[in-house]
Image (cartoon, rainbow, N blue to C red; front, side, top):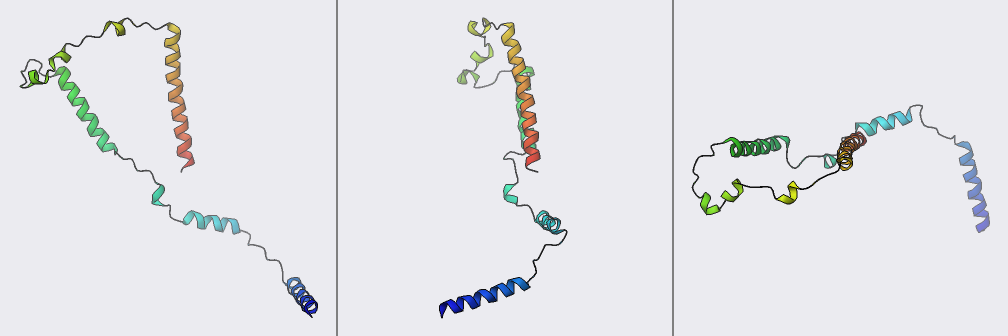
Length: 136
């Protein structure tokens, strides 16, 4: 009895499958799907936002340049109260130690260092361009 029921279901499924036509997608199915994918909104979770904005970096740079400019070209003859307490006068007459002044570099090492710096700058710019292109 079980075999007869299985045979009847098998015959029925063959008839149904035989009568149904194979469906194929429309001509521009891929294009329609890609259009819908591109229409989805980009998630804000993956966008890059720097911790310190360009305006803040500009302000920090202006402050640093201003302080350095004042220290180098400012009124050096003024008497600032508390400078003796901080003992900062030893930094005013700072002399480079003899170890640094006696340091010699060969011509080859100098050219290698220059070439290394140039190649590093080129590689950084190329890698940044490739990463920017990948994440667009």
